[in-house]
Every structure is written in C-alpha cells, then in structure tokens.
Length: 330
Image (tube, rainbow, N blue to C red; front, side, top):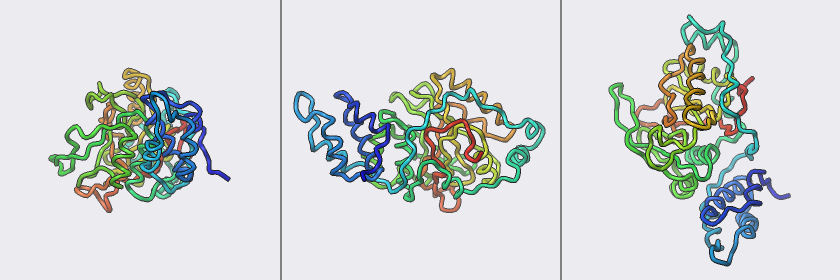
C-alpha cells in the first residue's frame, strides 16, 4: 500500500503552478511527500508528469531531482493537514469573571485551572503534529507548517546584553522565503540559525522591504507570554485556555511562548482583535507588550546558552497550524 498523499498536496498536484512559481510548488510537494514516507523515485514519478519537460519554459529532470535531494526529511507520524482555519478572534469568551479582578495574577490562574495539571510531555503527546527529536528539525518543521511557500520569514540571532543581563535581539536578521530557509539553510547545515543567545523569529510574514509593523504582509499570529508566572502554571493555563493556539514554544528559560492564530484581514482588524484578547487576559498577568504584528518570538530548535536555563533549548511543545476555538485540554 502506498503512503498517504494529503488532500492539500493532492490539490497542488492537480493544479500545477504557472511558470515563475513552479519551483516553490515542487519544493512544497516534495517536502510533504517525503515527510509522509514516499521514496525519492516515487516522488519523482508523481511530480514529473505534472510539469512540462519541453517547450519555452520546461522543468528539467535535473531540477526536480535537485529539489527532491534537497528536501528536508522528517521521522514522525503523518500530520493533520486539512483542518479548517479559525477565523478572526470574534468568538473569544472571557474566562469565568469570578476568578479575575482583584486577585493577584498567579492566584487568578490557579482559580482558573483548578486541580488540572499538565507537563511538557503531556503537551507534546497531545500535539496534533509530531514533535521532531532533533532541534534543527523542530525549527524546520515549525517553519514548514506555520508558513506558506511564498511567505518571507525573518529570523534574528544577533543580540546585545540589556541592563537586566538578558540577551536582546538586535539588527535586521535574515529574511528569506520558506523554501529558502528549508532547503538552503536547515537541510544544508542541519542546525537552526542561532547565536549564544539562541534565535528569534518574526511571527508574521513580511513584505521584503523592512521589519517594522508597516512591513507585515499577513496578520496571522499574536504572542501570549507571562512575565512572572511559574512555568508549571503557564503550561496548565495555556492547556486550558479556549483559544486557537497554533504553537507552544519553551523560551529556553522560564517562559512559554503561546502562538495564537488571529488570521486578521488587515492591520486595523488585527489591532482590534489583539487588543480585545489582551484586555481579557490582563488580569492573569499576560505581558501586554506583545501586541504589535512584527513581534519577535523565540525560534523553536535554537539553543539559548548565554542566559538560558537547563539545556537552554527553545523547545517546541505543541504544534497545530489549523487550530479551532477550543482548549488543548478541554
């Protein structure tokens, strides 16, 4: 029996991209097929008939084989590819008002989660998508599943040391298309881009002309993070929060970065949705500085040696690129 071909990949095979966009589409198809267990020769046999081999704009065999040889291979269970994307955060409902208000944030969280407990291992096991073992594969798989083929993704690894002794990102970093990160950086080096302070990724795709809010191309995600809450309470809070959570990433220190899927149509809608979300969660101690769409978050798979704790790995704990408006642990 042949391995699975996801419906989204089959749709690409049945609708070959026009000249100028074929290379990216073939990369996307090849990575998907390889991750689902297809052998290289079978991948070639599937792709070859879909694109012209002669004429004014051919796709030669050599190009297809080059893509197949360069694709990132993963050893994990097949992933859920066809869940419905959650619309903007119009259906968010505030947690029970009896647990918020005058209570200290940590006590409000304890009241909200009750007796429920959740560990890093529990979240990894609950993840709809497999969590890769090798750190660089965590980074590559995260980028492959969280972004579209033509998205321009910015990663920053340069840093300065702030007055608090912690590393702060600095500089423009590198902005590349998804396929360029996957094939030319991760596959060739087999490591995540990083410095002694780890690495950061700009959550939303850019337009290629800068790294500021005005350069954001798609308003897809926002970041939830706690300043002071103990790590174990962060885990249970995010596990019980009824939101479209796309990813949970351990920062390499004492916090968890929660990626919430916003999917806003423009900057104004993003600002409104995010402001309402943060207003709802402020009593729990959520960091209110994370509202801008060009926000950086910790890149999973990088290692934070300078000011990290434990092994310093910015570990991917949960991945669900097509989340619904529901709690991870309902």
